Image (cartoon, rainbow, N blue to C red; front, top):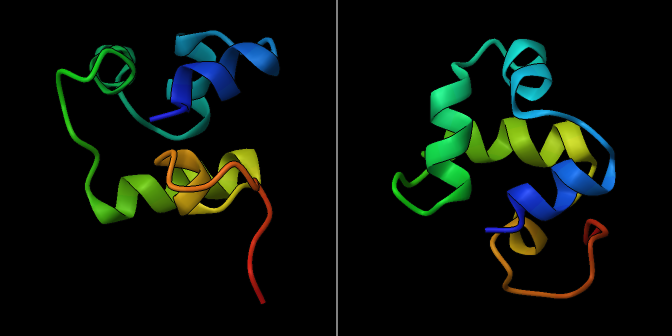
Length: 68
């Protein structure tokens, strides 16, 4: 998952992301390190927060834009 890449590119800490998304910082760390898999609702939160497609977030495409 590109979560860490997106977060660091925007200069956002794990704590800030966790607060903004009403999540736990430890969960963010586990997602970034591949220890935990995000469920659908969490993937949507991440994609909406960074304004990217879920496919981009999951590294299924290199195109970050949404398909319409």
